[in-house]
Image (tube, rainbow, N blue to C red; front, top):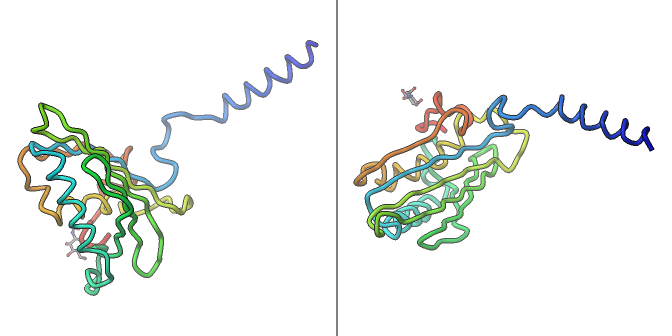
Length: 167
Ligand SMILES: *[C@@H]1O[C@H](CO)[C@@H](O)[C@H](O)[C@H]1NC(C)=O
């Protein structure tokens, strides 16, 4: 059945031409950040969870900004999940933090991800980065021992121009 082979080959060629890996950064608004701390994952998890609880109501945004409308979904030493809703616009972003101990439990590596539920929200002004960063800063973790952040514009939509006071 040579004609079948040709059809198959044509399909493979078309898919190959239209699929462009590693071209333009995240397709929709999202952010992935790696954080490192010289403290235990339990301490990091506790700080994150208590900060999410502090920013549940609308109160934190009465003067503008985005430090409100967080909602805790699940919490443990090694995994924290939450959502953040943009005030007024009502866009919801999914946040999750994976915490891994290393160096005999004295250090913690946090792999954090924020993804906009609305796939069409592409230009997010760094909202997804700020969703994560604001929790880190608010809880004082950015001042914690050994604090280190690894991310990029490729991993986080519009991260370098993000103003987390506003977004
Ligand atoms: C971020 O926005 C705030 C509030 O509008 C402003 O005061 C501040 O200067 C901005 N920061 C940067 C780095 O643009």
